[in-house]
Length: 408
Image (cartoon, rainbow, N blue to C red):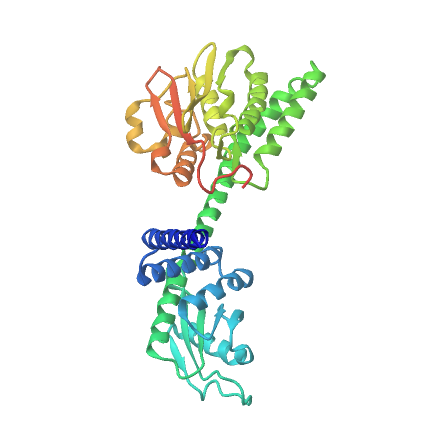
């Protein structure tokens, strides 16, 4: 009997201990979790909005609309939800599929007038007895510059209630802002491509002429050297006029600069001296395409245009923690520091040589603007110069930056 009582007391103690442990775990979880219904609701809304924002920021197309419409429907709380552009139905989630013609017609009217509307049973009448759809809310989507680019259509099982109307209007306003941001992103990308094209056009005429002239001078006297220069010139132009990618690596940019300097040394001979100090650890750093080459060309031309004798161009890239610091320096004629007050856009033409054609100078402003556009205003060019003291141009490039990848 005593043994049985000991066993019973042992089981009771074990159960009590387990109950106490379970209570402690539940209490601990209650303290650490999202404690209130309001907090949980806020999290769900923000999380769903984030899921919808990603495809919308890629633009209003069928594929992006199909990815976003399910999350938008969850935000609105509708029985069905459709996204349209100005003319066609892009995607629909939930009920209302057999009303697509009526929904598109209502969306077109909303796009044309720029006004939201509420549809009743008379506008969405159909012959199907089992159809629960009795109304819809149609809200225009406004993109950049106030242009109406499409519509958001929330389908209701009954007459749309004020809560559904307000939720649809607010969600359409938010979605329109995402589409406006997508248009601005696209415009910025087009501008960046246009700036690179302008830079290529600015570099190519005078350099191509000078390079071909230098190569031509070796055709009879040194055919092997002429052949080598032709190959270097071909590789240089292939890199400079490549059709893809707004970004490159420092290693690729330096490789192209080496080809450029090989051709320039064929022109200037021993008058052009080059010194490079490149830290190996910064070679993979990503930077805007053709942002270093113009600085080197500027230094070569300014370092030799009016300077008698030898000109030196120094290129340095060093590791600076989270950044890469790059400088291009020449010991040429320099410029009057007061020219800087006119802005960096004037730097390319401010060599002090009245015979220079300002249109031939590489636009340092182009490089400065692209660096600021990609990395922020704190990453523009820094220029140090003085008459007779040469010119030093410096830039800082973050080693890692969101959305910046070589070849992108």
